[in-house]
Figure 1: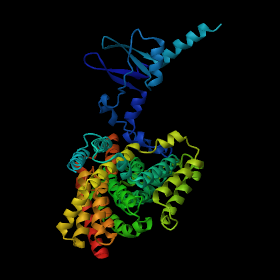
Figure 2: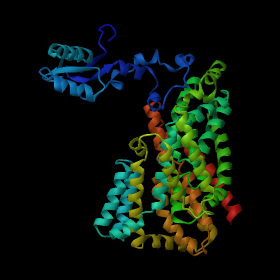
Figure 3: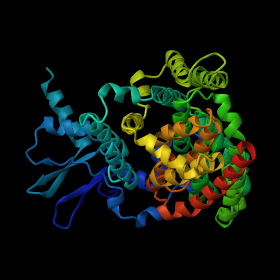
Figure 4: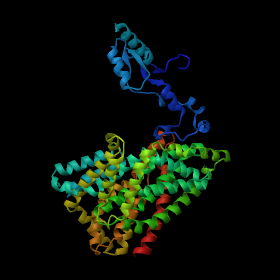
Length: 126
Length: 418
């Protein structure tokens, strides 16, 4: 993920089908302890405690299926802008896997989609 | 009558096995007894104890409104810091805070507030969080025993009788305090080897910035005094002629008026599944009462004990403890209330019967992982945190804790009421 420059990558099953999405948010979730989501806030945790709390070594050995995002955010390759926009608006995923015949063939990142929309808006402006 | 008993028995088995959510089972059971006309709709509605429902709803609203200020996180962190990282002090201060909070808020809420912070403290101290969480579950059930509003069985008993907040605290407070001290000490000794803290880790707890946990100082100043005022009003509710539900709902309403939080968000803090569970349960128990099943059970017990007060009191308390462990103490108490009312009626309204029921049902909440709502919730949080509490792990602490507290309760009943 760090090498590809993508904010999230699809997790693909053996048969090429989509299993889920693993992104920056999921990585943070895996790095920090599971109870973090249940804390109201962590405003009382000082910087000096980071080392004690982060699972820097431990999280690398965990299966990705434990942390991946499994909501259905895949779109077909001929998806409309409206469908893509709706999917980004309703899910927290930063990328949408593009599927054809049940296989993942690519991804659309939110950033790329934003640029496309921005260009459309600029082109339309008088 | 057979139909009412049959539906109720199946419902209890399903609740105990947890295959389906208990609220769905209670609503289905209630629906069946009404549809089959085992109980008329009008009687079914009368069977619902709105004093219990109102008290629960009012307390849930006040907890939700005060919780967003971060005050409970602050208390839990301060409790951890008060100990300076020394194992015995960590256990005592976390257990003490949990027990006191449980006495005045409900156990479930207390556990939901304290457990995540406990995980964080355990990480900072580099110790296993599970012993601390198990101790907290157990003392929350013991602490909740002390007051009318502390534990669902007490709320149900208060709804069905005219016992006051002061009556609860003066009759149940002393034994709850003794049981707390003894059980916490025993659990500490049992878990001692898992609670050793390295000197450098002790320092880490002190680095938490408790004051930083307060998220909204203005909201804190608006809401927390009302919570404290409401709790004080509970102490005198009988003297001023107000039912507990009125006190709780009045407090919640005043808090809603002064709070700046969104109403929709606040109302989402009401645990609707719990309230609907109570509704369904009351209707099913209403059908048992209406058809005479409760009276027969009471007669059965009466014949068995031959009306002997000692046998009845000790029988009630131990049956309640074991029954709560197997089923869940809420449905168990709701069923036992009319039975105890029958038994007690033969003894000129002797209140000791209610204390026997309360002690058994509340302490019995520690028997198994499913015996009380707080246990189930804490186990759920632990597995989300990646360190599940298994049924057996809990049982190893829960059974001794229940036996110790019930032995103390038996001695207390014998000394004070026999």
